Length: 410
Ligand SMILES: Nc1nc2c(ncn2[C@@H]2O[C@H](COP(=O)(O)OP(=O)(O)O)[C@@H](O)[C@H]2O)c(=O)[nH]1
Ligand SMILES: [Mg+2]
Image (cartoon, rainbow, N blue to C red; front, side):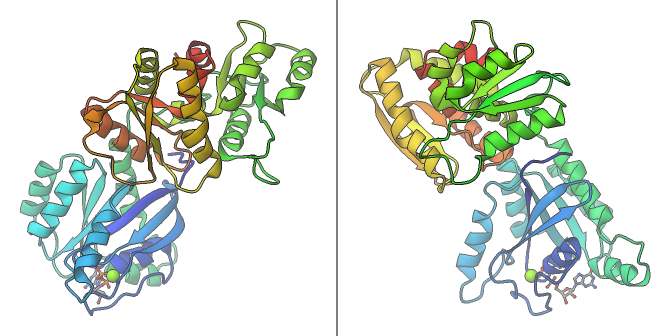
């Protein structure tokens, strides 16, 4: 499994089930305090690690969701809030106990579409009963169930250096993730579009918004993808594009540009030259592509007074904010000639109610969000009957080249 962003995996369960012991085993070091005093892990503890077969992960150890200490209510609420945007969860139980707390929590995970593994810990004390295993597999057909002992695994590892105490846990997690992978997400945006040796031109404007001394993530990602496919990335600014096009031995397999200069770039290229944008590539990679294609066409059907919901997945990228809050609304107003109202939601903030007030939602590229986070958000919007477009496609639309910029992916 290849993941560009680390997988966020959290451990949940009542107090004293062995969550922190598992966290320490998985991260291979003393990260979380293990204690037989229930309620020791007060705030979520995060730790990055590399798990064999899963790649880069961020593990999150949480307070028990039954925590009833002085801060209990808040802790439990925080454990629940941590659910949003997770790639997977480990629900840790023991002693064949799967009571209403656990059930409520597992139901919630299932509802939020977060894949999870129920890990029955302390099997050295009491193994998982077949009745509970069957109940779990019936109620949560997509989850995994594993009988385990953090204690025994730790002891075995201390006797046998070749023994990997978490291999089984990681393998089961991997199976669960694979079984629940979002369907329309290709691994890489350029898959099938470029061949070894193909030149690919990446147009990267360096303006006052460009970060100092570096490139932005989508530019780095697409450069890397060209290299992965043995294509030849050629980076340039808009000014140099005509010269680059003249000097290449053949027409590039693809030109990928920053969406803000779509208009300029398309005028500099011969008709028929495959062209797309970084953010459209990102949308291709992060799923929901068909939804965005259809949603963007909605821009042709806007009328005066309609409301558009702008969704930014992160709260800190000044560049995206400027595009989403200022440039894109201005470009849409200009191109449509309509008097429109824009509303903004950032990060994981809740969606405004009622969604029926809006005629269209436009989601940012989500370079800092996982495919699952985006899938979840887009699903909620679609369930409310709202068409969903995407920043990159909307910018292409505003530049009059929506069809051309999305053609290569259709
Ligand atoms: N017998 C046994 N005890 C365990 C196992 N895993 C954890 N424990 C013990 O259970 C207690 C609670 O563990 P901890 O990891 O702090 O649980 P948490 O509250 O869920 O984070 C500690 O005393 C651990 O040593 C296990 O597999 N078997
Ligand atoms: Mg703990």
